[in-house]
Image 1 (tube, rainbow, N blue to C red):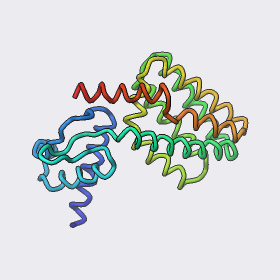
Image 2: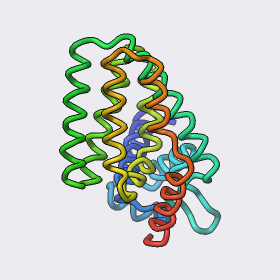
Image 3: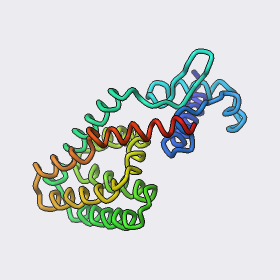
Length: 223
């Protein structure tokens, strides 16, 4: 495959992926190659390649005679992904508590304050954006570039579903309270508490998983 075409299909994949994560392309939406090619001003070949790349991530499902559809992972896979994310974030929190420097502490405090403003406004979308900043500050504060990159990649893969669960009733207030406890543990240098709190904050089970599944169904029905 020619390098220019590889770059083009990669750029298209990133654009479509962002639109799925941002909710502009809903779960169940059909991704018509011809329409996308016209929209982006390209041939169908790089569009097809981009959709195949997205199918490998699970964000897109390609069905015979129906083409490509925005998809949601199997519930068991979703649980496994959140379990993995929880363990990665727990490790980031543990290392951040051990290695925190003044600049990262200031950034963490500022990110927490921004989350509080969004929560007070009861604005899930604004809170989601500030929540992303909050978690990326923790990734940076762990001072392990490889671990931080793995965390960012999986966070992005789960972004759509993390955003959905923030729409559950009372979740913004709960999430903010969890953030406050996490920051307190990291600043205090309590590695065990920081790890345990982040794991509990990220993992989706029980009522939180039921709420997430309900949101997935609502998005699918609306598509």
